Amino acid sequence: MLKIAVFSQKGGAGKSTLAVHVAVAAARSMQVILIDADPQGTVVSWAQDRQAVDPFVARVEPSSITQLLEGATSEGFELAVIDCPPHAAPGTTALLRAADHVVIPCQPTMPDLSATARSVALARSAGRGYSFVVNRAPARAPEVMQAIEALGGGGRVAPIVIGDRRAYSRALTDGRAVTEFAPSGSKAADEINGYWDWLYEHVKEQAWQTQQAA
Image (cartoon, rainbow, N blue to C red; front, side):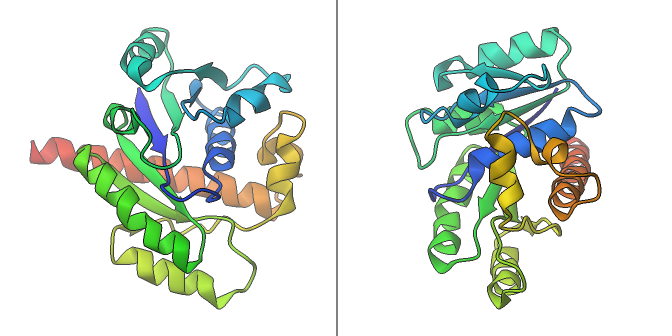
């Protein structure tokens, strides 16, 4: 089972929202478990209003993440998306170690860019690969390209930028994701689908490189 943690040291980066939309996009083609390890419980609150059964949503304390993932693997799940706590909360390192890859969302602002250094340090200390994605990006803002260039100095940056679109938050209000809420071919749905396709291929490539180096 592939395991992806979504983590950011900076609050307001859209971490939980991104985790939900990515998990639903992935659930089109595989069995997905979406794990809420954030004390704020955003994912669990979203799931309470959701009618669809996929992805399966589970709440977990960091100390129990290994057992949950082992159980999910035995039940046939192919992907786990872990919504981590913001900041370096107790147990965060255990969550990152349990993942195969860490996604670090970042808004194109100086405070967010500065905070990524701490996120990277935690991912590295957990011994896990990571990638950045520019999230909640304003349309046609020069700061977006500046953020991509700045992040590129510290790691791989997703070529898909996630825009600051109302559709992302509106979809969540009744337990849906943007790929279900927005019409097919909408910019928001295309962004999420494109990002997930890229992330999946990137993580598989990273895993292959790790195996070759072992």
